[in-house]
Length: 481
Image 1: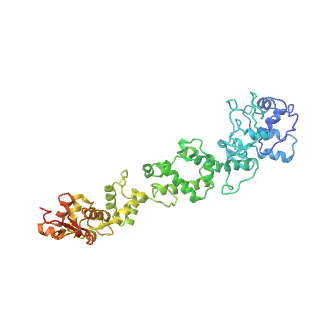
Image 2 (image 1 turned 45 degrees about the vertical axis):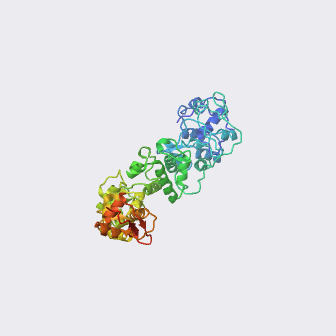
């Protein structure tokens, strides 16, 4: 690099500030020389003025007779590119995470002291943590380039500073972390302290897109996202992360898509993989994300190397718990219409928690034909024609714990019996016949009397509620012709 020694800075009464990069200090010295273009000045002294390189400017500034502490201060705040990574003091950021081609600034900070702070150049930074002010990147509707060396006014004469006292409306931990690391050279306390800055920024940026204005959204609806929400997720305990992701999936992804699996329900990250590999923070978030999804969606047994607690069950797992053969259970689920969009391919069928709970309640309520007698008070073979006529659902081909034969929901049997018992409130009188007595007198089955009653052909004349089930019914002698 060739530097024109005939045109050095003639004065350096201005001193580098804490957190000030080389290009900011260089600009201030240019302005102090009375020049109006940093680009022209740099070119005249023999360095790249069109597209300045921070460490080249730093090399020039290292020729100045500053104190050792001032030189170190300047070096620690200047981005130096090595092996594709920018080093800022002891922090590291990727090239795409840093931008110093255009100026961004907090007018209140400039009102406090006229110099550029290095954390403003982090692409995802949006606010000043000291004043809560949104960083300004447009002046007079245009980008402000670094060719302009002044910090108090724009080239058009518009003021860039605001000396009005401003207090932040909210605490911004991510932006405070940036300031602490880059301006002050101190790492924050907490779970992110051990990680490189580039490993923090990328997952915080991506998962910050899961929220907008305090609500869950799909990342495609939030291209900029909420970096503070993403950073908060990095510092949240694992169990709370899992619940956060479960709530996100329930809110944003519809149940049918969740049944299709994790890949179908989860926003793609492949195209914006910013050091995702070997990033333990990202790995921890994906672990929590899959666990959260497993609570509310269908997560295949073979798709992931992670060990996860799943809330969904395969057909095989559900059949074992319910003590029903898999094929019989799949037919039963299909008959009930519980999973209308399911692909019936054996173990691949996934049964979500709500469906499993519905199945369990139904199966736990099922009774065999002989067991109906305790409710109806009549033999099972006399009751079955009533069920087969469609007045209650008869379930066949569903062995439970090895017990075959037709089954009925106990609740439905009880409701049918109560329906018949409430057809009259009259107490039995002499001359009335019981259900069994009328059947014998007429030479018909008990079922025939019950079907005629349910079809509206006859009405019970009395009821004795002290008797069990349908034995409580009494009929007039002429009731069944």
